[in-house]
Length: 149
Image 1 (tube, helix red, strand yellow):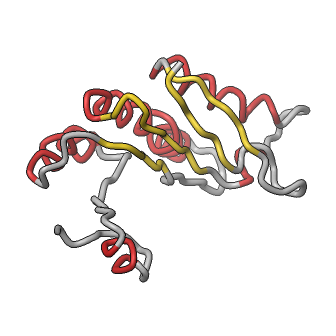
Image 2 (cartoon, helix red, strand yellow; image 1 turned 90 degrees about the horizontal axis):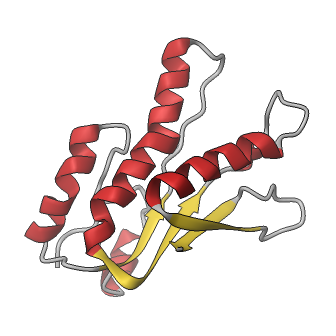
């Protein structure tokens, strides 16, 4: 079995459960584009679960920060889902994990920023979004699950 690549020190436990981890930088288009070939090399033809847990936040909204933020948090994840569509099993789940900061905004209604991000991913991938709120004090953007529309 291929060695797991993750920042999680318990990755050996995941390996024993039959899970493989593949490092990916969603802000790097070549990393995203090469993923299907890397999966093929590992002998992976179908995925049953895709967890998108990449995300960045910057202090200040310079043009560079805004472009890096958008590239990582939206564009990279949309590209990833589109690249992997042929690898996703018909019953596969895509889970997008986000911090509570997805609801923080300078706008009068913070839900607008959260909704805009989820709307972009929905339209770009043809996947429907459902938001779960695991704890009452957790903002509603804490966990977004995408399932085929």
